[in-house]
Image (cartoon, protein in one colour):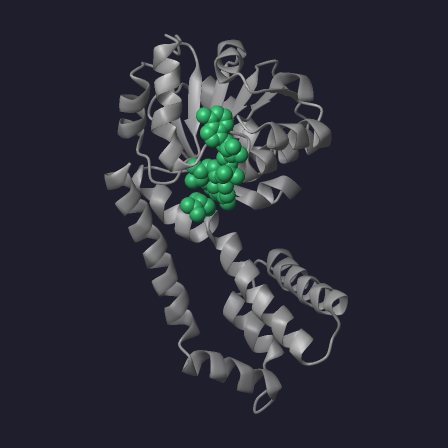
Length: 273
Ligand SMILES: NC(=O)C1=CN([C@@H]2O[C@H](COP(=O)(O)OP(=O)(O)OC[C@H]3O[C@@H](n4cnc5c(N)ncnc54)[C@H](O)[C@@H]3O)[C@@H](O)[C@H]2O)C=CC1
Ligand SMILES: O=C(O)[C@@H]1CCC=N1
């Protein structure tokens, strides 16, 4: 793995997950700097990983070859202003933003610099090496692309997108979607508890079934999801009754509408931030 230094600026949920994935998959803690202005959060990162930690963003950036900006979108402008005030030269650095709703053009404006910019849309399963990261850039060369791909491949699957607008689409498909799955699992868990399973059983039953279903889909790529579902569904049986109830309640449409809402919000944020 290269000796380049990677600085995560604003190490919250998302960067924590990326760092966790990187460390499990060949990156050296020595080459990673994590910052947070919140000391408690920084202490947790230092406790869980052996990466360098600091609350000094400017120092971290000066020492880094690759910078991952992972503050909330609404905080990005204020963060970039501190770089401008410190007169940081970003010319030879690659700056990756994982923020939803901030275009590369807007980020360039915020940074007022010729840094090479990349947009990345990761997801939190990166923590366990099962993430998906959508990536887009028009600034980087092949070698830089290979290195960035190595970073995010260490956390799971990477997909290089051919247009920036696809970042908003992939937010709906993979960036936000772990939350859809958690909501679905939570609904099953709640009902299992209502049926009398204790808390631990309910949690274990739902997570084992979700894992089993995902693993079946992965291990049988030639079988469509529809067929996998049909294989559980006996004619006139129990699953049929459950699936028909979900269809009557417009579950597929509900999901499609939710994904449209996700994309619309990303587009709205692009106008607001
Ligand atoms: N959480 C997720 O599943 C995903 C999040 N993202 C993007 O990742 C970014 C971060 O999201 P989360 O990690 O969920 O948020 P978070 O709130 O958990 O993490 C952001 C961290 O930045 C710190 N921070 C804020 N301003 C700072 C500053 N000036 N200097 C140093 N640290 C500062 C905060 O204390 C906080 O801990 C967002 O832009 C979001 O759009 C992208 C994909 C998935
Ligand atoms: O909810 C959000 O805005 C971020 C982006 C994708 C996942 N979390």
